[in-house]
Amino acid sequence: MAEEPQKNIGTWYIDPDAEDRMADGHAPIWRHLIDLIVERDLTGKSVLDFGCNQGGLLRHLYAIRPFRKALGIDIAETSIAKAETLKGNLPIQHQVGGRLEGWDEEFDLAVSHEVIYLVPDIDAHAADIRRALKPGGVYYAVTGCHTDNPLWPQWRELVANRTNTVVQDRSITDYGCAFEKAGFDVSARKLEYDGFIPFVADGWTPDFADALNYYTQTKIVFRLVKR
Image (cartoon, rainbow, N blue to C red):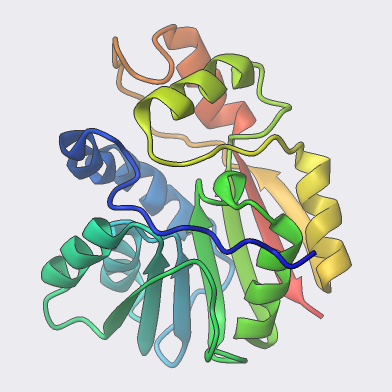
């Protein structure tokens, strides 16, 4: 049976104000992630951000480690339009969609932050990213949204109630198996965010102890090298 294409949406959050605030909340995590990326010099490299939302991760990356060019792709049409208005004169292109047709062996580096748990067909996604990477290219995929997360039962309900997306149930091992099968050398580490974590009473982790554990222990960074 053919894979059903992932449908485009307007924004990830149902509340557009929450969509705008998301970048501020993610910014410290993005900076920490950038520091973990093994590839230090990106000046001659092309970069992909899969599920880029409003484009903030690529803008942060360019400010810290300038790259030659980049593509941000996302199924959220309104968010992509916002990313275009915010990019200024940076060498970044944005595209609406969930597949990478026409980008074969284009990118040296790919990243995604809290996206892979929403992808309906993880095998197709892994193959798609691998095809878009140059030989030896690397994909950093970050997620704390997996069934090994003790908060997962509550979070599934929050995703359903607050967003326009459909969550998938996968373990850390499920992700590792899918990417290994697609032709990646798979490794991973805990994000181990080392900054101060703000308390948000109505956020995803209203129990502050859960928030501290999530950002230091639960959130995973996969490093996937194309074989």
